[in-house]
Image 1 (tube, helix red, strand yellow):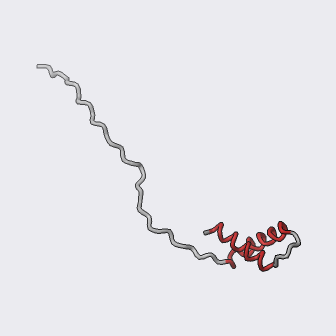
Image 2 (cartoon, helix red, strand yellow; image 1 turned 90 degrees about the vertical axis):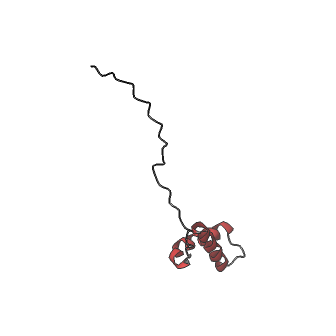
Image 3 (cartoon, helix red, strand yellow; image 1 turned 45 degrees about the vertical axis):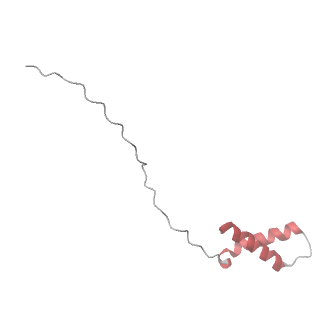
Length: 76
């Protein structure tokens, strides 16, 4: 007796899972800004502020504080 071949049932569609697993991350720790670590960058920024203002009534301390705030905003 000969065997008859029956057509295989169509395969069920697989639902695809994402290839990478998403992990839950906790809150990002706040990094303290240490001006001493960025002294060179602050000095350059203060110099550029001084150049832009020309020989104005501002003081070097004001330029430094403004430069420090500018550099701080880049990192935080």
